[in-house]
Amino acid sequence: MPTVSNQTLAVFLMRTMLGLVFLYAGFWKVFVLGADQHAAQFFVAAYKDSWIPGILLTVTGYAIPYFELIAGLMIVIGLRTREAVFLCGLLLLLTTYGHLLKEPLFDIDGHTFTRLALIVGWLLMPIGSDRISVDGVLAARRGA
Image (cartoon, rainbow, N blue to C red; front, side, top):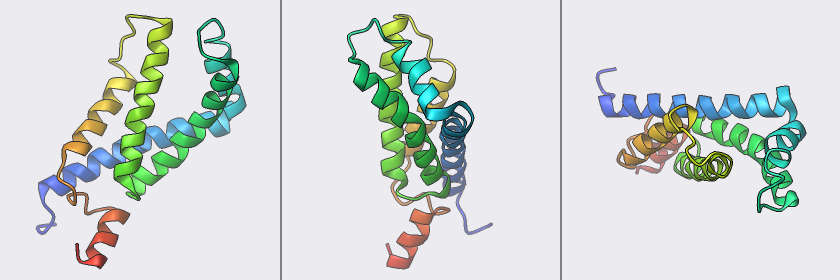
C-alpha cells in the first residue's frame, strides 16, 4: 500500500463507517421494523400534536428508511458520494429539528453527533481524495 496516502485511507474509513451506519439503520427500518411502522410510530404518533401536517409526517416517516438504505449503500461503495453524504447531512438537520420539537434540549451526543462528525470530516477532505471508491475508479478512468 505504499502508493496509497494516509489521507486516502482516512477518507475511505470515514466514508465506509458513515455508509454502514446509514445502510444498517435503513435496513433495520425497512426490513425488520417496516417502513410503515417507522412512519406510524416515530412520525405520525410522535408528532401528532405538532404543527406538522399528518400527510407530511406519513410521507417523511415512510421515505426516510428507504433514503437511508439507498444513500448508505451509495456511500459504502462510493457512488455519487458527495451528493449522498450532503443529503445525509440534510437528513440529520431534519431529524434534529424533529427531536428539538419534542425535547428543546435534545442531546445530540449519540448517533447524531457521530454521523455529523463523519459527514463534516469527509466533506472537508479535498475533492478527489476518495480514490478507493466507485467515484475514484470512474475519475481515474476519465483521467481526472
